[in-house]
Length: 244
Image (tube, rainbow, N blue to C red; front, side, top):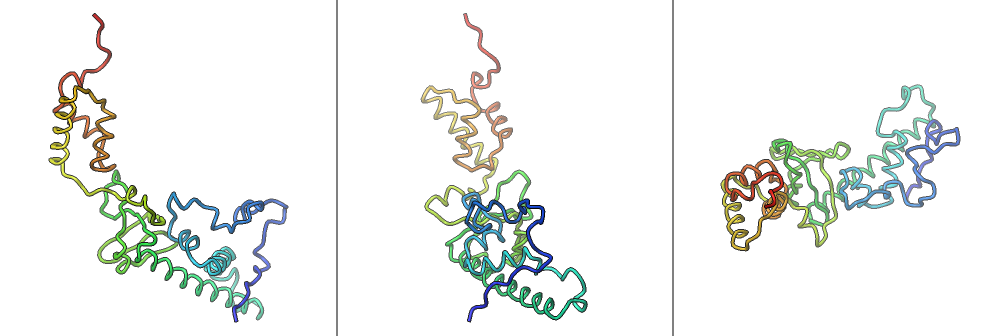
């Protein structure tokens, strides 16, 4: 028989001044609080676990954590009444069970590719974007759901965001790293192709084309230096040309 949800402890309730508690949100919105998010923007592990997991377990995990059952009691356990001790023990066990089930569920979905995640490896430069975490990596990773981090297999990942896999997923995948020589060769070809067409692309057009080829890792100053070195002089002319 399924156990019904417990009521909150007496000391854990909405504000008494008639105001709306920040944790309960807008009462006009009938959706559970953890569903009032935009999953297309990516969700941290804890939010994703609630959003994509079993909703009965999500309700228990959200409410029990909000009520403080993931922390020690407000005052010493031995000073609590027997009823308060019973309530704390049951609430804590409910939270642990719900979390265990939800964590297992989302890891299965990430491993199967139904969901995917991006994150920042510890050795990633500050100016590099998040990279997609391959599904089979989750066999080796030990996630921290509250911090939205993971480690394992000699890798540390932070800033993890979870997305639902769709047909457009490929647009979010970061392209492979490129070498300066590869970028230089590409830009030389870019110059020749534009000269052949008689076009004179702007610096912004250069950057857009380079990022389409190599991803967001291409930096504007790098491309400007290549333009100055490899492009025709009229491409690098600054200011307005005089009218005869």
